[in-house]
Image 1 (cartoon, rainbow, N blue to C red):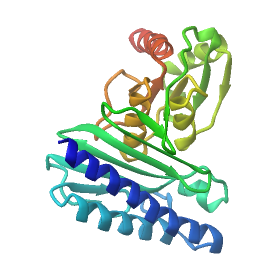
Image 2 (spheres, rainbow, N blue to C red):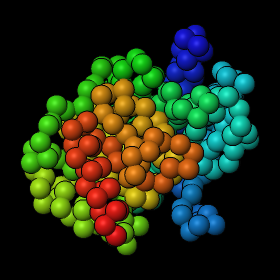
Image 3 (cartoon, helix red, strand yellow):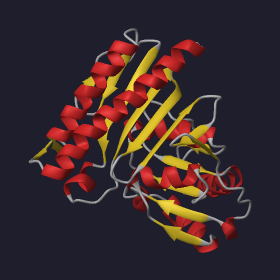
Length: 262
């Protein structure tokens, strides 16, 4: 499996580079925006980047299925499955803010084992392979050693669903008891978490394509990455609780208490 993962990582990084060229081209020139069936925006940059990624990944690992944001899944039942979001953060892209990225992950029998997160305008690329650590542009990264909630930096992303949940009050308590709260969102707060700048990330409205690669990166940097109920990420994941171990444990306990009480 080592040789296969080496080949897969090289392909994922190449694919992220190919996507970056396409995305940066349209970032410079601009592009029309269409709406998908769910009223979310999509551009030619999304579509062309995914096609480029698919070509590289399929050539490198033909035995793997590919599940992409723009062109769907060819086969999610295979032993190996690529998960691809070519331009995660299209809303940011069309509004000319740099908080968008390319997310490429590889699953083996339902477990995410490899991830590449590339943010070309922001200027960062992170990657990780299960058991080998996490890296930012080639340098190893680790989460912060934060042990007390009073010292912790929290970041929230998409939390609309959580506002209708009993756990909303628990989030308020976490915010009150923490050192500070930010809302970096998208790939950015996961990158910050993996390299020690943030201690806890909370989101209630995501899809697995948004976070699969980031889950591997955060975990390999020494963090804990689950959904809001403490479950490991999978194809059905819709929420995230990711953090340094001590802060993740404290937050999960509070969220569970709120769930029990409702």
